[in-house]
Length: 475
Image (tube, rainbow, N blue to C red; front, side, top):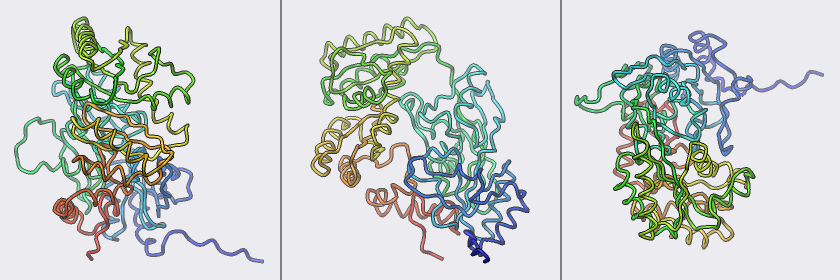
């Protein structure tokens, strides 16, 4: 008996485009969904299925341009894919075998390190940690600091305008990009790699692409800002009496540490308790529990003794003025790493505890404490039994308001973010998971302007459709 034929998972309408892509890139560069090497296309959080028609693996900007040109002629949707570490589904193909994924992983060369200009040009597939190392080998610093820096890639951090724990000192990715090279939705290459700090010649085109989540084109390379490498680092953990002291503590830290202040990281007793319970190697730095903690870091290129003295002065004044009830300074690099490990272990501890509903939000600096307390009460009322683990980059207003056993909490949290004049996405982007939240919290004028930009640069709507904005209904 003849076994039934296995249906082709790729729609027949895509066959001509895929055949042309194989001719343009090489058959081994166009992977079928079932190929083992195509398995890297997955959602980091496991919330969205990935069913691409094919995975394209170009090796150069020219090959990216050739692939996008083919897709534009055949009106095949293209989903740019870099490291796959995003948390909002921004690089996951939608539908069943109707979109192709274009991976930039093999565009992984560091093209140049320009020491006099404090600049480095890296292709989109370069891992962030490799860029950090290349800068360090030149005696400089690439300051983007992310939990996923060992696997996320430059194309992804540019597309999502990634943040991290050094934003307070160095800014978001937007502030770290001097120039871009990108393939536009029609296949043309925009050669915008520059090292200029001042270029007042009209619209800043690179800023349209930064944070656009692959909806306006494919970033293939970026020229990045470098900085003098800090030679001294001072770290301490403060125990706070409550959240109401945060504005005063932030103001004091800015006053005493000035531009040397590089990080202010907040986490609660709930978060520290999760880390201590889930990670046996972790140790509580204090002899008794406290409701809130703030990790402070300051850096300097010279005079480490003065840096240490400034941080010690902050700790003393914070305790004297009731902004902190206790403090543990790191006496050496090992202790500094141990204190940072408590903050950085929070996502892993959440995962081991069963996972959480994640809310990456931001509010004005002076409202952080009030927002967290208000949102905790609202979530408790709406989701009995839910446990809030609120932590984040308090120096720039970014709160990761995560809720364990908190199904249904997102509507509550996002409503309150709007009431506090905040943002539903501080650093992770919109993707598909926050698309409705964006639509609900931005004015019709703002949404119309976003749509105008999208339609102008991508009139066929083939670049990462369904992400950030709803797909256009226009023909």
